[in-house]
Length: 267
Image 1 (cartoon, rainbow, N blue to C red):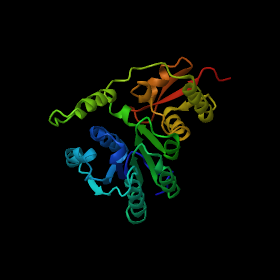
Image 2 (image 1 turned 60 degrees about the vertical axis):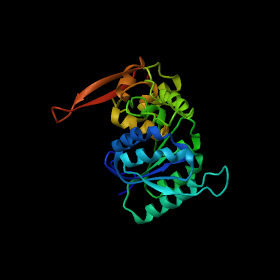
Image 3 (image 1 turned 90 degrees about the horizontal axis):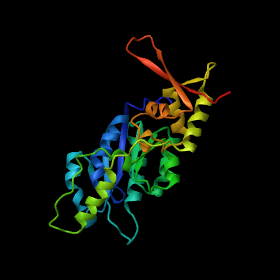
Image 4 (image 1 turned 180 degrees about the horizontal axis):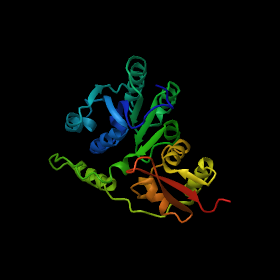
C-alpha cells in the first residue's frame, strides 16, 4: 500500500512513546486520539524504568496494554531512549506489516526518523507538547498537541503518593491540560492559509470540497488542528470566519451531504 493510497482512518499503526518526554496522565487521551486513525498493532514505551521519575507509569501501561522497553541511561543528562526507539522503528519498518507510525514525544531528535519513515511510504503521526520544535512537527504528516487532546479528559487523575510535594505540581500541570479552549477569533495567517487552499482546490464555481480542504491544509501545516482554536470541527471553524461561505450538496446517498467552501473575496 503506497503512502498516497492510505486510508488514514483504518491504518495498522506502530506506536512508539518516549516516556521521558510525555506526561503519563495524558496517555489515555493519547491512545484515544490514535484510535481515530487506525489500530495500534504495536505499542511500546521507552525509558529507564529503574529511574524514580518514571516509576509511576505502571498503572497507565497496564490499562492501555503498552509494552515497556528498558533502556538504561548510560550518560547523565542524555536521553538514551531515543536511540532505542529509532532502532526499533527501523526494525519494525522492515519486519512488520504497518501502514504508519505514531511517535509520541516532544523531542526534536526524532525529526530524521520521521523523515526516513515517510520516505519509506509510512504515514507518520506525531503527538507532543506545544514545546515541540518546529522541525519535528514539519517532518510528520500530522502533528497533534497533547494539550489539545487532553483538554476534555476528565479521567486523568493524580495518584496519592503520600503527601510528596510533587503531587501538587502534578495537579497544577493537569489543570493546564484540562482547561477547555474557548472558540476564538481565527488568526489572520490561518485565515490566509484556508483562503490559499480554497483557491488551489476550487472548481469552476469557486467552491472547494471541505474534505479535500482539510487534507491540503494538513499537508501545508502538519500541526493544524481546528481544536487548537476551540472548534469541534473544521466546518464550524470555517463557518465562523466572515470571509468564507459554506454550502451543502446532496450526494447519491440521501443520508449524506458534502460541504463545500467558497472564498467571498476571491475574484
